[in-house]
Length: 158
Image (cartoon, rainbow, N blue to C red):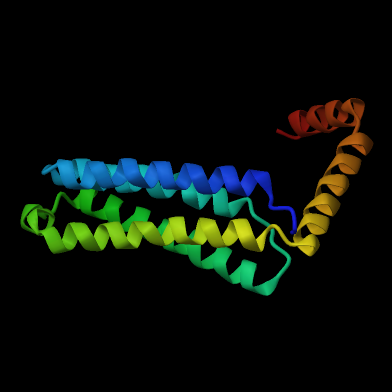
């Protein structure tokens, strides 16, 4: 049996936990601003998480891009409703709409599970290790003295 990536397993578990908290908020709250704010607080960390991924395999790249842009789109949509202050109470009171929001938000949990499996391949392990080694090498070669010189040079130009 192949080894599964522990980080992505913990990430999947945290996505489930955060999703359950969101569901409770959606079904127990009747205030639209609370639901929209909860959706924003749900989707922003997901977008930031996917932004940092650098997958190797094409299917993982597609899943990363789809999740990233869906989270960004959901955030923008919710922010627009909050900022424009549109009356969406009738929309939020509808049980079908709440169920639809649950299904849309479960999309991220499903993809987190797929990420756990997709990022646990040998090629993805090796690729992430190669990236970490390159970053470590860059940090070792970019010494403190060089950073100080660069900061001083930038300060003089301003």
